[in-house]
Length: 138
Image (cartoon, rainbow, N blue to C red; front, side, top):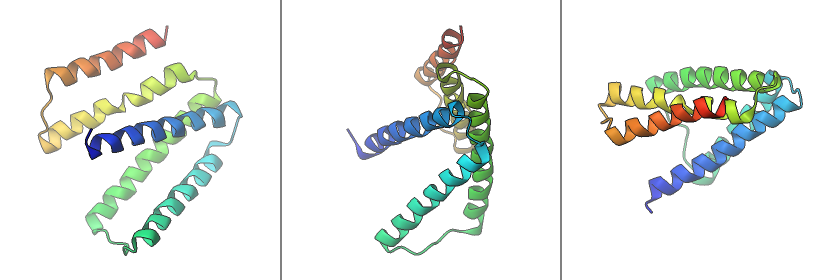
């Protein structure tokens, strides 16, 4: 298995654990913005440690910094919406798959902006994702 695939699997596992902790915070009626601040602090500390270990200076073009800021806002909205959904009693078996279908947005944007191919196999996979929402929500 190649390195990008192994990294994707690592991201899948870590992302799944992160999502599960959102459920834990919601079930325990945690105040969502406070939880998000603590999560953001640990995220930033992790990035700082990587910079220190790799001895690489902070470098980012203004354009990429702008993308990072906008992305952070979208991530904040997504995280807040997920936390509030769980706080209001949302079931993980329903909320997680719906949130996970964000891949449809990513695939569509990749197709439109970077002309990545959308194959029939990819469309079938997205169809299975949508079908999972239908089955899990019943």
